[in-house]
Length: 478
Ligand SMILES: Cc1cc2nc3c(=O)[nH]c(=O)nc-3n(C[C@H](O)[C@H](O)[C@H](O)COP(=O)(O)OP(=O)(O)OC[C@H]3O[C@@H](n4cnc5c(N)ncnc54)[C@H](O)[C@@H]3O)c2cc1C
Ligand code: SF4
Image (cartoon, rainbow, N blue to C red; front, side):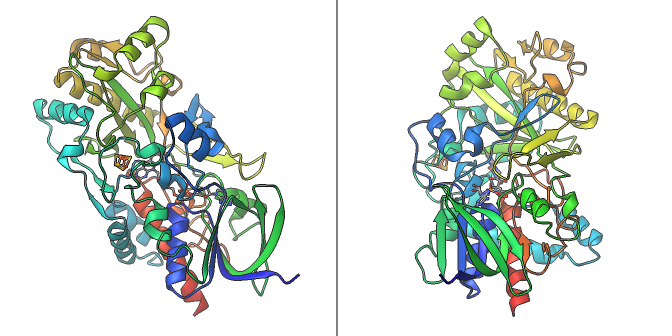
């Protein structure tokens, strides 16, 4: 039987892969996009969404100081289908640094233009006042009382958001601009493009006349096809597997190292009156730390059905906070990390094993983030605040008690944190070339290609890298 042939195969339909596929199609190429996960449908509750559409049923994590959960999506649209939709541009000083490091091979101006294009495609706009959560209002009120300026509504990728608070569990209104909605819905079914869900990349053989690509269906059957080029966009945790296994690019041995994650944590605050935390856009407001720009505060909401697992208390204390759920406001923070981890794949591409240890400077920032958030909530009138440390006395009722709490000693192992932005494991300029290539026929276009920790939510930057990789492939073909 003749081998199926495509111009390009894109593996992974997330922020990077979907943007790359749409750009290649717009450039006149025949493109097959394969996605390991299924198409997403709104779920009955958060647990169902996590089981169906998160990789490893939501249990993906790094170990090192303790367990650091790193959730990622495994569905059409990748992690954008289960993300918060917040849009931030990659900081100009960081992209200028890439231009310098690459001796001009990476153009900060050119990348900035792609970022603006992504911004328009995502219909990014400021979250309207009427969708702000009670928690965000309280946090901003606390900042105001402390005389701290800069708190604002965040920009989000949405078209018709009603503030139903389920962004991370598949938007029930189909309002969030996922990468499927942004890049793929318009080309789905068109001649020259095919999206196959439940289909995983498993094998890559780069030859002189093209790439032989092995795919596996969800029923376990394998087949091969031929393409002129391949875009790797399986995400920061999986792409390095392929780079190492198939020795792609001169620096393939380095793939998997340099993992940055934007460690994040949250403070819970108990108020006398109802906050109704489930109403509104969970991540609709934020502020940059006035003294340390590497710390960013953003709204967050953990649905009631999951909250108990994310409260650093046991027994009666846990029950008290759970019973008070309608009066609890939660606010989060994340840091631009200096620490680095690594990802290995002893069990294959689908089961990354990540290690990450937090250095002292990052830990200090996490402590500052927790204190700052707690102080804002106390200023807003919180009765008590619960800090993200698994230590005695993590619950305090006033600023004096907060200041007296020794948070320097517990260390990262006591910190209850998560990480939502794994980046950098096949960094551009380190593992991939500055044009994102791993040799003439394979390009990388996902979070793994981001050279370093960004300090901002990365979906806009990753989609811009997706467009950039596609432009390079189209250019190479011309
Ligand atoms: C809960 C949560 C909230 C977030 N909120 C925000 C936010 O508000 N703003 C923001 O900017 N960022 C946010 N992020 C992060 C952002 O969504 C991700 O950084 C981004 O989507 C990553 O894009 P990617 O292309 O690297 O990978 P992904 O979007 O993860 O896509 C990779 C895809 O590849 C597929 N895949 C993996 N292996 C294979 C294979 N072998 N074959 C085929 N397909 C494969 C996966 O199933 C997945 O669908 C959030 C993340 C999480 C977890
Ligand atoms: S708040 Fe609700 S409607 Fe708005 S994007 Fe999130 S899930 Fe969708």
